[in-house]
Image 1 (cartoon, rainbow, N blue to C red):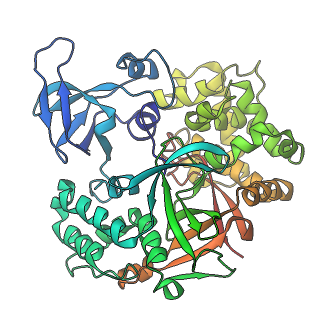
Image 2 (image 1 turned 60 degrees about the vertical axis):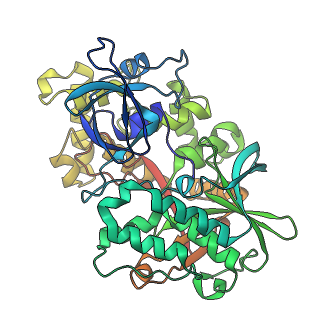
Length: 461
């Protein structure tokens, strides 16, 4: 349940999108700008502000009081509120409006369980991870219900709010009754509830056999003692953990339906970076590692915000086969293609890369990429790299080995059953499924690849 914070949040949701209209996810204050034409003012959860465009990383950091430049560095950013300019902490900014015009209702697990008891655990190799802990489904429901009642963002979707209030007031976490007027897109918001829903089902114990299925034996469905939720935003190991009565702890990764694909950079690459044995078994993984090293991405902190830069270094060197003499800084290709509409404005190196891309897209018979060149470059690089990984048995075997060592259980919620009021999950062990690498799901005209770069999915055998 790690969330994106600070600089990483700005890069992921706002960078390059101009002025962005967003909701405030919790009450806070707006500060006056440097010219002090306004005074400090209070703002309430759910109110709308406009984040004004910030054109560079340097400009972002100029708004921070910290001298450190890290992926989690927070800042007070320029916004417009009621036609006046202020500074607003990025910590209280929600994501932009989601597809279909729905606001982000802030139903993420950390919000739902903010009243939980806190305790520190050693989890997946990390020491003293701060966690929320539950031993009772009733207590969890009480906390979630309290949050739903107080969530003013949900007032704009009152039928959904009432449906969730009834769900958390019920005695059966495996059933939910949506009011007839709740739309499909509002039902889809339950994807955020899935992490707590499976926890409540496990703690209730009575409906586990009907609500949870698996092709393999799941060792924690009948003897749960605690459910544990990591609260540390930098923790990327799993969404939750189950501790059984004998003291064994099992990791769970939650997905809605097939689920958003997991990040290669966050979950797999750190192992590849740290352990040469993995790189020795796969030339593709070695090439990815060399690409990251070449642009100075050598720590886990840098990996979190540098996936696209690594893709461009790999793309320019290993897909277009351009040496450093032919193209010195591979990411300049992205910057040129993003900035200019006319090929005559590109650098000589970028023009050469453009024509190489054109030939490669023709060879691949990728008419969509070709039609949208240059905007399609990021997506083309991502999909080409993912295809190469899928086509190489050694690479897939190495990645499966890493996943097996992580040893977690993936819980996929059945979203079709959810529409019928049934809260059901299918559980697959990380080492017990098949692996598919996925290039970004962004459209070819989205050069920013805002839906991630290289991801993966585990499916049942």
